[in-house]
Each structure stands twice: as C-alpha cells, then as structure tokens.
Length: 145
Image (cartoon, rainbow, N blue to C red; front, top):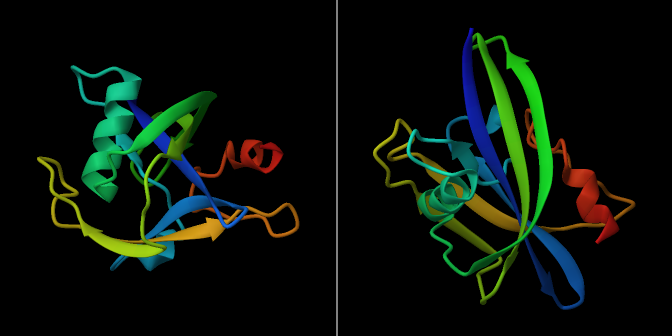
C-alpha cells in the first residue's frame, strides 16, 4: 500500500483582541470545504522544510513563526488508495496581512496554477471552525490558546 506524509499549518494571528486562523477555499473545488495551507513531503525534506515550502507556495506568506508541533494523525484515503500520515503545526503570523487575499500557486507540482482564496476566521469557543477532510484533527488545540 502506498504511504504519503503530509504537513498542515494552523497559521494564527491576533487582530483587535481576536485570535484568528488563516483559512482558504480552493477555487473550482469548493466542495473540499474550508482548508488551511499544507501539503506533501518531498524526498529531500524535513517536516518543517515541507511545511514552510507549502506555506510559501500556497499563501506567499514568509513572516511566520513556528510555535508548536501539535502531533500526527494516520488515516486511509480510499479515493486515492493511500495511507496518509498528517503532521499538524501551530504557527503565528509576524507581520501585517490583509483580511482577505487570493494566491495562484507557483510550484513544480500538480498544484501549479491552482487558485486559493484566503480569509482570517475568528477562533471562538462557541463557534468552532469545521475544516474539510482530515485538516481539523488538531484544531481543538487552538481553542485552548
């Protein structure tokens, strides 16, 4: 069975006393739901290198500080017949960023040319964010920050 390692970035900021998470919707496949940056580990990378590369490719954000490794989650993705180990990280944005922006991915991978629409969502205990697929596995950790 094929196995794949992936990283997931929970990028947060504080704005006007609100704790916020950077989220995105992928144009053309809105059915995937709300997502966060992340992607597949390449052969010559560490998990942290993969995470930062994916953040740069997908969001163009460079001013992020890695705060905490939250853990990993293993699951079987039947649609692609692959076992995935996903690693989750908490990061903080360290410079100003628009509340909403869009990015066209520039990479050597299959995601080259994909269009992501980003927006910051308040993290509130009484209104939990639901992320698509397995992306929300460690999201509960953010409600305790």
